[in-house]
Structures are given as C-alpha cells and as structure tokens.
Length: 226
Ligand SMILES: *Cc1c(COP(=O)(O)O)cnc(C)c1O
Image 1 (tube, rainbow, N blue to C red):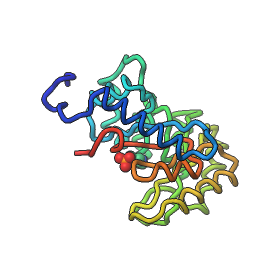
Image 2: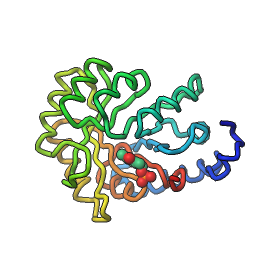
Image 3: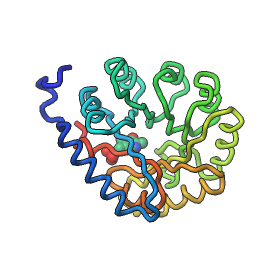
C-alpha cells in the first residue's frame, strides 16, 4: 500500500498526527497531579500499516494492536523500519495465538489467566506484561476479577515474567470511570507493581489524574475507525 494510495486519503497526515499528539500531551500534562511521564500507546487496530508509518514519523513509538493476524501482517509489512514500532498487544489473548505472536510483541497488556501466564512462560520467557483486571464487573469484558488478580500476579512473578503493571478498561456504558481507575491503582499498590495501563480516548484525562502511567489512544489520534 503506497503512501498516496486511494485508500489512504482519509487517513491523517504526519502533520495532523503531530498536532493531535501535541494536544494530547498538553492535556495529559494538565491532568497530571505529579508531572510524571505518561507513555502513549497509539492504537491502530483496523487501520492500515501506512498509518503506523505516519504515526512513527509523527513521534509515536508505542503501537497497540488488538488482533493477532492483523498484527502479524502489519509487522511483516513494516519489517526493517527505523525507528521500529514497539508493539503492544492489547486485544483478548488466546493461548494458541501466543506462539506466533511471541516474536513480534514487546509488551502484553491483557494477561488475565493462568493458562496465558504459562504459555508466555514457555513461548516468551521474561516477557513484559500487564495483568488485566476487570474493574467494572461487566460480564462481557476480559480481565481477571480483583480477587483473582493477586494470584495471577504471583503466578506471573513465579513464571519469571516482567510485570510492568496492571491494565484495565474503564466502564463502557458512560459511567464515571474514576472509581474503576482508583481501584486499579489501589490493587497495584497492594500487589507491589508500578505501572498502570488505563485510559482510552474518552477517559484518558481522568485516568492520568488517577495515576495512569500508560494510556492507550486510538480515535483521538487517528480519527474514527471504519
Ligand atoms: C480500541 C482500544 C483502545 C483505543 O480506543 P479509543 O477509544 O479509540 O482510544 C484502547 N484500549 C483497548 C484495550 C482497545 O481495545
């Protein structure tokens, strides 16, 4: 897919991406209570690889993808790129997909059960992970329960995985996300893990105010997904 292909017309330009990124960074600084650095994962699911090229050119380095096959295809298309994207897997993890993704993924955000921990131990020793917690008790959502999270963290430690932190998805129903983010923060303190992957386009400022160290942003940077 060429940079000026017909299908790319509606994608934001490098300049547009830069200005959206600056705006988001300003909002993050304004929302932050302690001025700590907040990493931005640019979520490119459903967008073509050319958008990732532009995102990298605009200064984003961390790229989030949700679907294994798409990630494999995009990583192949972008092989050898400098700077290379750092791939963050943020979709629901299936045990049988891990082997193929292990050579690509740099950080796994959605580790939520024992079988995933043991598969990562086998296929991606020492992998960087976040343990995903369902802090809103919405039944359709992935993530372990708050009660299970201590055990998953212990298992991941015992398996030699590098626990970068906890991850959650705020309420999908438009409720106040603050209680969910605060619960994740207090769980992270209880479990002695540092990072908090929380906040998406609609709620990242609240997440930052609650201590997010990583926000995962799609539409606010790249526009609506088709
Ligand atoms: C799609 C997705 C995002 C980004 O969503 P936006 O609302 O477009 O910012 C973040 N995190 C996860 C887990 C996602 O699936």
